Image (cartoon, rainbow, N blue to C red; front, side, top):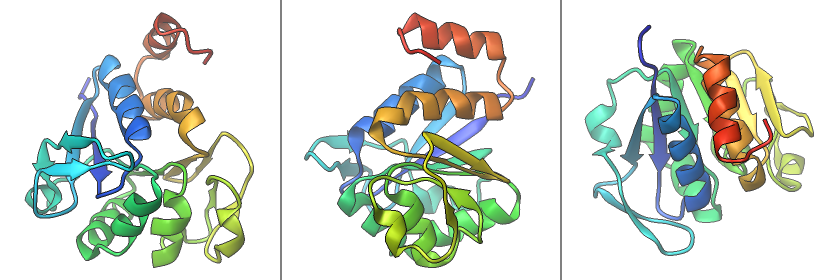
Length: 187
């Protein structure tokens, strides 16, 4: 079996708990996960001022095709992702290839909707941000799947989001369940 490759896009102000929980959970499933800095420096400062060193710069991986790309939330992080042309191009190329586009929290609205990338698909986001969205169909659930768009409601759903993505990437369901139980997550 080919090991799936996933990219987590980090921009200044990203929600560190979402990024780390998802990263940790996917690594437990033996998925290859790359943290990509969506800026000119490898150190990215999170929403709560934690400096994190990414594995690479997005510009170095622009031509790499991942099985999934994850867009963490964070008020400033999603604004910075949504206004970055390299991020938008990266999302568009993955979407066109049918790869998983995976926003969590505010990213569905502040990144995808802002750039007309929801394309009428169903999604979930945090709070009432959906009231300002025009591009997709909001569904109030923990996680929502529509074609190759997989979205999560917010930080409290990060484990469910990660383990569900593991299953979507065709990881062994028994292993996913084992890993979830191993860290005492009801999945």
